[in-house]
Amino acid sequence: MAGERRWISPALEDGANVLYLQGRWRLSHVPGIAAEIDALKLAGDHCVLDGSRLEELDTAAGFLLLRRLAALGCIAGTVEVRSMADGHSRLLTLVRERMAAPSVAAPSAIAGRWSASAGRRSGSGASSRPRSPFSARSRSRSPPRCAGRACFVSRKRCRSSRP
Image (cartoon, rainbow, N blue to C red):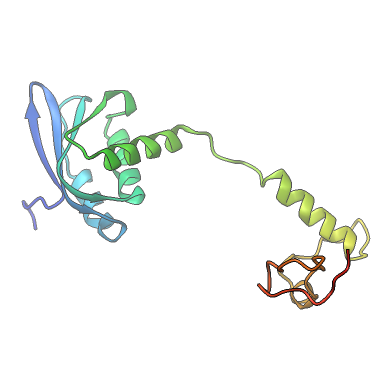
């Protein structure tokens, strides 16, 4: 497979790198796609992604494509999309937006409050670590009373009719 290109057919058109994406770009094909992107020799930093031959595209392959192109110098502002199915272009736009968003550094406040309240409910002191909500003790407790409505956990009608 030295000279054969299965996923990308590169061309130079009017001074721009045109990458004809072809085939099914799925998670299972990521190693081959990555190897072809890494082997690309781009002239300049302007890149056009042509999706006229693209059959499928998932988020993993879209992320890989945009990240590797950025490493080669084709950043978001210099990448154009043409002849791409609406779903594929929307997916690439979503991936690009997620790549530009800041990463989350800390767990959410809701999860922190829940685990802190679980520690208070267990009767342990403030210095001990809160009990995990997935411990055997928490799983063995009976489901909450639900005033005669359908219970979400057991999907059965509760026995208690407590108001």
